[in-house]
Length: 308
Image (cartoon, rainbow, N blue to C red; front, side, top):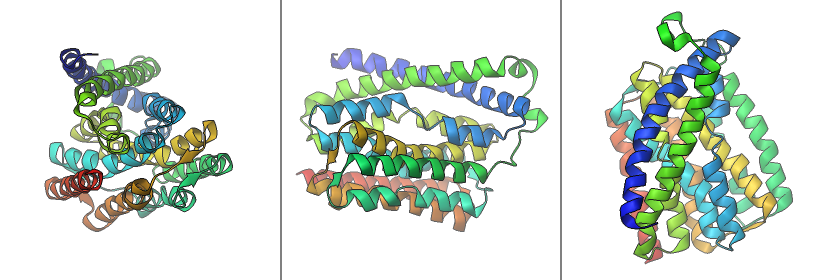
């Protein structure tokens, strides 16, 4: 794919993702209302299952690029906790009214990954342990908002019709838009000559997660901050446990020095910092957003210097 085609794919992907995010939120609210299940729970469970991120990790690891493969989930976690949350706070400031247990599960999510990966190797049995941890952490995070049912006014008019179809359509369109964004951004940066580990933890991680900005901004602007924050936490749990575990099950991961000494600690600490912001500030506004974006900029600077 040429740079020109990549730019077109990037723009089309952005348009598709923004529109799909609105449909996805309608579906979540409608399905939650029909089933009597909090849309927050559905968000935590569903939004983090991203085939494009998992496929990118499996494919790059199969080609022997384990540093880039690990970057899809390590760089993805850092991108979510700092960049997505920060930009979301800038676009649509939100109150963080979720229980403290929600922040605790967000902070705890990457700790088992750190424990098994700090020695530079993630085996198949350790991948299985991470998947087991994923089940527990996802259940724990989802339970924290099980009482947050949608109000009747949240889903009205035409948006009440066919909620299941809207949920599936929105999720499918988000996935397709995510693929376009990923392919487009990758086509733009692949000729720059970036080292695989740096590419995986920065450009690749950001490209496959760019649609998360819409998943966070759209519900926040519609007055549903719990959906925006639930999406971030749910995706972090998926990446740090499920994706890492599945990739290691397919082929054990061998992590280089840069990964174990920089990218892994960053992915471990960044959700804790986000959780601390939510607990102490009780909101994710523009000031908090600027602070988180500054932390991501520092992370990018450190990654570039490390690869130099």
